[in-house]
Image (cartoon, rainbow, N blue to C red; front, side, top):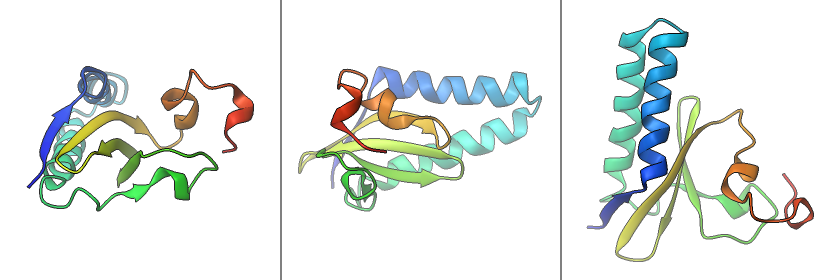
Length: 111
């Protein structure tokens, strides 16, 4: 069984998701449900760390990132054989490649 580590940025992403849905969309019930669904999917990675899709299969970039789809949100993580490191949780409509690889020149990947 894998160990789960959630990055500070991913925790902040979850808080931002909850805050946005609660405050901007005025739906605290949905906020709680959506964040619970995402965290449940993350916990499932303990038993099935390879269950997410490889990001490299969806973008022309060499990376060890994998991702889970949770409704409108994508959970990006890495698995090193013992530990799952959850890096970010982003809305699927965001330019997540730019967010994940902001240090790369734009020519290094093709969305």
